[in-house]
Length: 438
Image 1: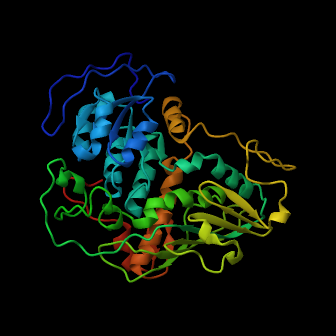
Image 2: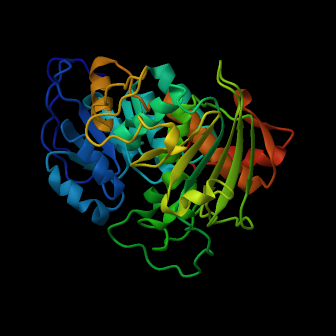
Image 3: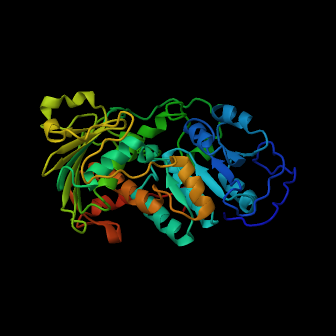
C-alpha cells in the first residue's frame, strides 16, 4: 500500500470551509496483504453506490459528492467516513491518510480527479469511460505508469466467465484468423437543444463544483443527475455509456491497441448534444502474427448485412468475430459459434465448462473489485489497468471525434494527432475552466 506505517495519524475534528461533518479516527495500516486499504471515494450517489459497495470490504475513510440528496443513502452507510463537497480539498487534507481512490463522477470530471489522486501516488479505480477526451486518456495512461500505481477501469464484464470463455475461443484459433469484427450496442438517446429556462439551483447541489472543468452554463435539471451523458460538455453519449463494456471483448480477444484510420457517420452533427445513432469504421494494423482487422461500431442501428438469418435484433448489444474458419457471436451474458454443426463440442457452459481436444480454459477471475484490491496490496496487475483500458478508451472516443469532424482520418497514435486533418485537433483535447486543469 502507499502508506506504510504502523499506526495512522488520528483525525482531528476541525471542519474546513466547504467540508461536511467530519468523521471519527482512521485505522492503522502496516502494509500487510491482509491489512485493509484506506479508500477515498470521489462520487457517492448514483453509479458510485455500486462501486463503493464493491470496495466496502476495505476502510471507506472519505466520501466526496457535490449532491447531498443524491449521495444521502451512501453517506448514511458510512458515518465514520469524513465528508467533502470538493475532491481537491479532500485529497489535500487526506493525502497521508488514504491509499487508494475510487472515481465515480460524470465523465467530464474523471480525469481531473483521477490525475490529482495519482500524482499523489494513490491507487485508482475509475468508472467507465476512463475519460471525456482522447488526450485525457493518454495523460492518465502515462501517469499511471510513471507513478507505478495500481489502476482499474470499471469494465466489470471483463472478469465475467462468459467474456473470458469467448476471449479464449478466439485466441485459441477456434474460428481461425479474424480480419473482420462487428460491434453494436442498444440505445438511441441524445439530441435536443439547450434549455432556455434558468431555474434556481437546488439547495442540495453545488452546481459550480458539479461543472468542474466544463464551461460555465446555467443549471437545469435536464443535466443532473443523469442527462449529462448526452451533452458534449459533460458526457460521451451512448458511445461512452456502454461502449467500454462491449468493446472490451474484441480489444482483449484480438490484442487491439491503436487504430490507424477512423471514419464515422450519423445524423447531422449538433454542437451541444450527442447523436441518437452512429456508425464507426476502424482499421487496425497487424499485431505480431495476427492479421489486420476492420472493425465496425454501431449504436442505435444494427449492422446491416451481417448474419441476417440469425435475427440479430435479439442480441441487443453484441460482438461478432468473423474468422477464416467460422464466426463467434457474443454479448454480455452468452456466446455462440457458427456454423453450429462445425463446433459440436464447444457450447456455452451450463455448469461444467465445455471441453474440446487440445483446448484448456483459464482460471476464473476473483472478481473485478477484488482483483483491484488485491493488486493494491500485493503489487500484482489488475486486468483492466490503464495501460490496457487507456488505449481502449482512446479508440472508443476517436469514433466520436470522427463523427464530429465529419471526415475519415489516418491516426498517428504516437503523436496523438490526425494526419493531414487539422479539424480533428479541437476534438482531441479541450479547454478547462480555471482551477480545474490537469
